[in-house]
Image 1 (cartoon, rainbow, N blue to C red):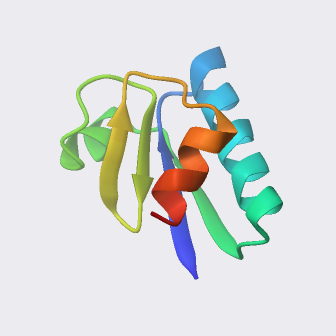
Image 2: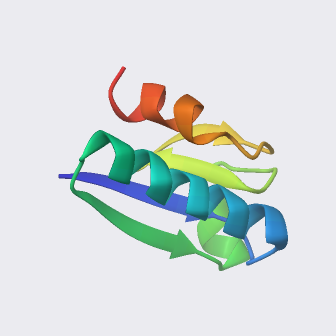
Image 3: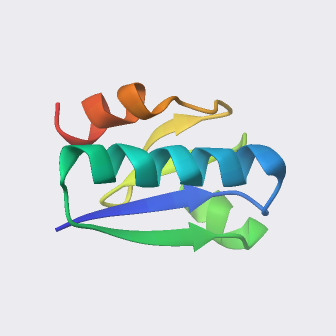
Length: 78
């Protein structure tokens, strides 16, 4: 099972990215564990300097962008 982590303090862009990630997983039929990382210290531990950030299985794959569901699908299953 993949783990998708949304890195952000809860702003509108972070919430949009989370919704797009959930939609991508649902369309793909992937079983995914979601986690929101909202603590600045925890976000920085990922090396993410610009939110929103998207991490898959603990690896940051995007930061500072609100990816669309189709873009996220390519990252979930390259």
